[in-house]
Length: 227
Image 1 (tube, rainbow, N blue to C red):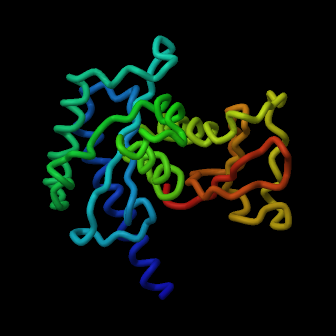
Image 2 (image 1 turned 90 degrees about the horizontal axis):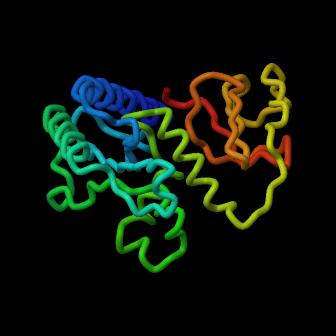
Image 3 (image 1 turned 45 degrees about the vertical axis):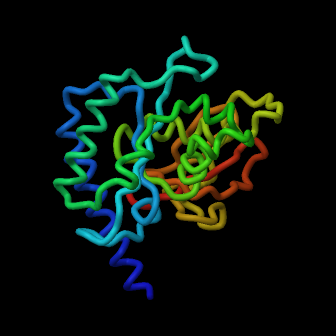
């Protein structure tokens, strides 16, 4: 079983690298500064079969500017058309199956609207619930890694909106050289705070959603996986 999982992980990494590199080439002249693209499903769990065998389940998160505090704006239409055309072309070139229902679920979700709809009756109808839960549980970035990390952190913060916090700085990270201080991968973790500040304790993070016991102001730990 371990060999099977290791093989699927390697296939997933190869597929992700191909998708990322091809999209990076196609998007050189397209402004993607406000949108992050992430993959879920078997690629998000690093269990995919590649080449051929697994679907490419993509989601798009739009980060609006300060002029949109209520999350009403959408990604500009021409930017969206260019982005989605590049995504479709790359998926076809790599011989992925066509997107479900003729691309019905390919939509850029405004991250602030995701927060506003948390627990509402509208989020399932607009596919927001699926986009949010899969982002948290089984996602890998495809386009715009830094923004993906920021929007992931912002989405986690939606769950703590009712909690007051007075912390404005991160605690000192645990001693990465000591295995007794770390329950995941020593030397490759990131501490995330409720205040939205981050400090890297090591290289190449990927979301694991595990609580850190080193400080009451720390919410989540990220441990090295596929990057």
